[in-house]
Length: 169
Image (cartoon, rainbow, N blue to C red; front, side, top):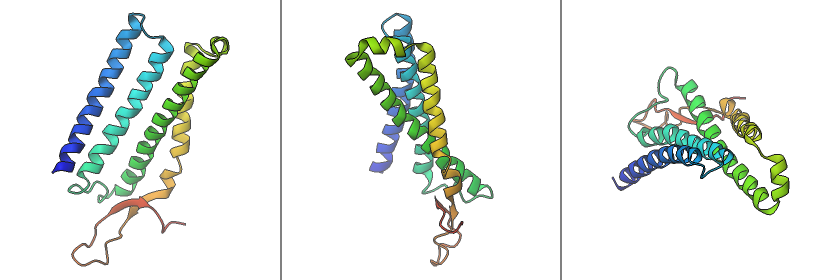
């Protein structure tokens, strides 16, 4: 029960925090407190975090009682789940890295920053982050699949797990 309550608190805090971040950065940008480039980065980062929370937490939390991959389309659902979850996770990491690098250049090399910054370049960078995340996650569409590891254990016949597929070559 403690773990369930902790998961629920993290889920609610993640949804609220990232939603507030999206709304607040938009408001602060309109009032002139934030640059458009920073706002775009922050909104995209918050969206990738929201997707990680919305995709990952419910499936992980309910997997003990709800068998989402033990359906006729379970193998496809397994592959899509891990692909989307990992793509969003990679996007989060890459957003933090690109935002950190951009802030480093802005602080340590302000004249170079003026030459390499701008709303159009930031949009290209954000598209690059999402595109790279999707490409890096693509192998999971082939590596993941449903397995039946508990078939040999008595009273657990037919239990399906979504895992790295070892039987496919």
